[in-house]
Amino acid sequence: MELHIQIIWLFIMAIPIACVAWTVTHEEVFREPREYCVKCSKEGKTIFKRKFFYLFTCEYCFSHYVTLFFLILSGYQLLLTGWKGYLIAGFALVFVANAYMSVFALLRQAIKKEKTEIKVMEKEVEDKEANK
Image (tube, rainbow, N blue to C red; front, side, top):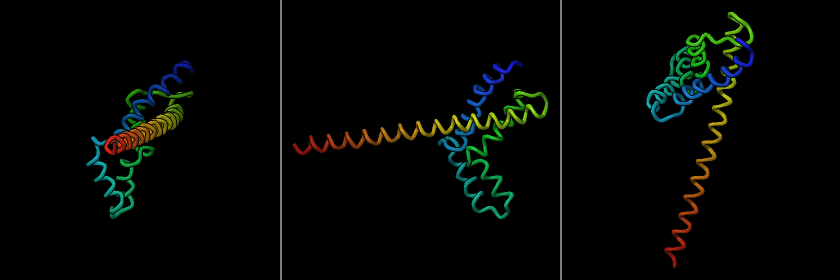
């Protein structure tokens, strides 16, 4: 596969990896299993149990396993062939996926801040109108 095609694959395949990792570790749909994993990661009797359950609460950690799944599914290799290509692709995909998740987190934070500021302004306008 030509290098420019490999790079396109890298940036496109990182999108679903980031999406899955973010959804499992942050979104409401997985809240109950995530809360269970948080509890087990803090209260587990063995270090293995604590670390295993922690993997499902950290988007960075979980993205490694999602990446492994996508590498097996797609057979994507970067720069080299064989296990070296898989290794390079795996770490590159994790890096790009986590960059996407960081941008997404900043965007969500900015949107939430803006919504909060709008609510405060609306409340101030309502208070002024009520005092008239």
